[in-house]
Image (tube, rainbow, N blue to C red):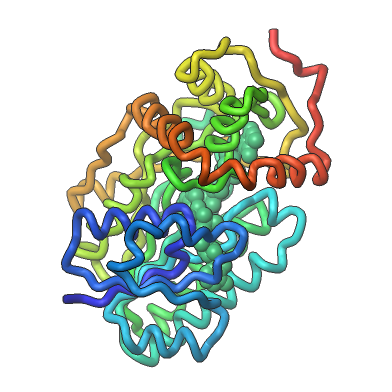
Length: 343
Ligand code: NAD
Ligand code: DAU
C-alpha cells in the first residue's frame, strides 16, 4: 500500500482530494499535513479522521517536512495561500508558503528520493484578451499578474529546476478555477451562493465580463490521480474542462436562476486591482496522452446545482464565518458601484 502525503489537505481542493481518494482509490495510506490557516478547516475531514493520519504543521518547517516525506512514498502538494484578493493586501504569506514552503518540500523530496506531484494554477500564464480565441497550453510562457500568481509561478520554476538540476521524480499540473463543496466562502461562487442564502445580493466585480474556465473539484482531483498513475515524470499537464465561455456576470445569473431569484438581483462592486480578464485551458495533452475526461464537462449548471445544494444543506459549515468574511471585504474598500447598476 503506497503512503500518500497530502499537503494542504484541510483546504478546499485538498480535502476533496482526501475524500475522492478514499472513495475511489482505497489502496493508499493517507497522511495530511496542514497548518490550519484561516482557509484550513479540520471539519472538512471530520468524517474520515479515523481513516487518515492528520498532522497540524507548517510546510515551511524543514524538520517536520523532512520527517513526513521520509515516511511517505508520494507527496501531493496542495498547500498554498490561494486567494488573489488577500495577496493584494498582504503578499508575505504567499511568498513564504508558496515559495519557501515549496522549496522545503523539494529539498526533502530530493534527499529522500520520493515522487512529487505539484499542484499549480492557470494563473501563472497571466490572462488573455476577452475576445482572444486562444487557450493556454503547456508551452505558454509564464506571465503572472498578482502576488498570488507570481508566487505560484515561482514555485513551478523551482520544481522544474529541481527536476532538471537534481533529477527529482516530479510532475506538475496547472488547473483552472475550481468549484464545489468545502470551498472557502471568500471565493466567487460560494460567496454568491451564501449571500443569496442570507437574502443578500451577489457581488460582481466591475462589469463582470471576466471569464474563468470553471471545473468541478472532483474532475481536477480525478486528473491528479490519472497523472499519478500514468503521468510521465518531468512533464507538466494542463487541466481544464472547456468551460471558458461563461463570464462572471453569466455565472451569477445562473446561480440566481437556480436559486429562484430574479436574474438581475445582484450589485456591481469595486473591481479587483489588476483583475485578469480571461483564462482558458487547452487540456488536449492530458486527454490524449493519459485518457482523462471530466465528468462535469460543459455542464456548469449541473455542477452549480450540486454545489448550491451542498451550501444549502451545510449552513453550519459556513455561517459562523460569513459576517467576518463580508466585513473583511468592506474593510478592504469594497463598495457598491452605482453607475454600473443593472439594467
Ligand atoms: P485553500 O486556500 O482552500 O486551501 C489551502 C490549504 O493549505 C489550507 O488548508 C491551509 O490551511 C493550507 N496551508 C496554507 N499554508 C500552509 C502552510 N504554510 N503549511 C501547511 N498548510 C498550509 O486552497 P485551494 O483552493 O484548496 O487550493 C489548493 C491548491 O490548488 C493551491 O496550491 C492552489 O494554488 C491550487 N489551485 C487552486 C485552484 C482553485 O480554483 N481554488 C485552481 C488551480 C490550482
Ligand atoms: O484560476 C485558478 C485560480 O482560481 C486559483 O489559482 C486560485 O487559487 C483561486 O482562488 C481562483 O482565482 P480567482 O481569482 O480567479 O478566483 P475568485 O473566486 O477569487 O474569483 C473568480 C472571479 O470572480 C474573478 O474574476 C473575480 C470575480 N469575483 C470574485 C469575488 C470574490 C467577483 O466578481 N465577485 C466576488 O465577490
